Length: 181
Image 1 (spheres, rainbow, N blue to C red):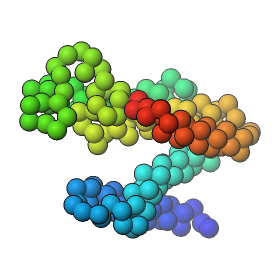
Image 2: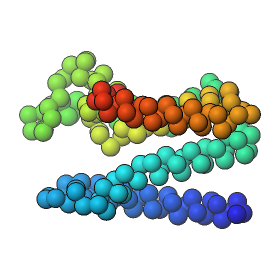
Image 3: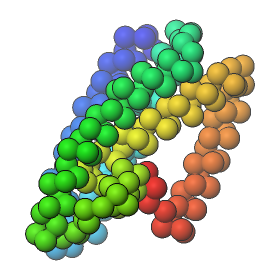
Image 4: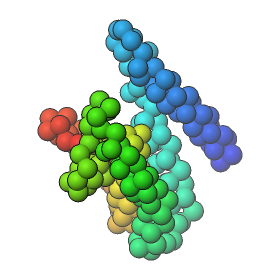
């Protein structure tokens, strides 16, 4: 498959992912037993892994195929600017209004330093819950960058180790009800 056809296919997957995210957020509050409907459960299960797959594929093209040569420090600076700065700025800007309006919220937030720190790092305490993926993507990109640099000639081994750790993490997170990032 030619490179332009691959990119076109990725563009199609991106559009599909956006549609699935919009549907997921639109139908989230739908009353009744709709959440038990197989189609709803299917696209809820597929939409975020689809974005992770697309990101990983494009990341691989930029790093491996084009021999992306940048230092770890420059890579982290760039990703922090693009992902963490907006995340922190929006969290800081929304924390105070959310804490002030806690009496009207389903889940009140205290106006103290512990609540503020929790609102940055724990997914069940975020002030803007829809931004949970920004720090997660930052960590995944940094781990991937380091892994690709370390396992340059053995990428299959890196992917195998990553897959095993992902599966183990999935079961541990569900078991411990861990909400960090």
